[in-house]
Image 1: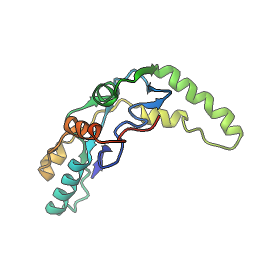
Image 2: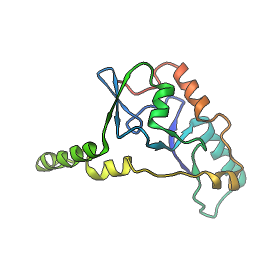
Image 3: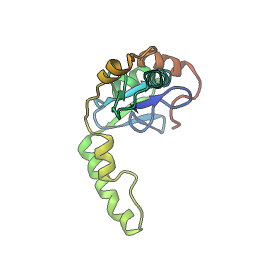
Image 4: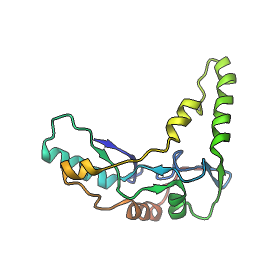
Amino acid sequence: LRPGQIFGGGIPLIGGAVAIGTAGRWLVLGDGRLELPLVYLDDLVDAILAAVDRQLVGGQVIQVIDREHLTQTDVLDLAGGDRKVVRVPRPLVFALGKLSELPLGLLGRRSPVALYRLRSALARLTYDSDRAEDLLGWKPRVGVREGIRRVTSAPAQTAPG
């Protein structure tokens, strides 16, 4: 099983893939339209139990991702509160990533925002859970919108900042 971005049960919804909390604002890397491969923890547990019940042993790769594809902006609209959102254009994000590599490389350190990492994190991919439904009979019982409602009504479910 390959779960997407898991949230719930103490795992924050808003992290670096969505936005970075800083100075009372949300800093979004890119235009906010990046689709996120979200899965609520309870739904992932259901998929794991379904895989155990089905005794899958053929090495199938099964993406476990909610069918509703929310973007960074969607998540912040649902869970970001009243913080102002600042979007950093993709070209600027990549330029800053590239620029960070040289001085840190001279110090013998890897940049936490190196170009390779940024390209991986900000890749515009599509995700499909059809195999989870076909092979496991899995559909999200809770779903991302209800999961977001649950984590936003619980204390301390977003990244600090």
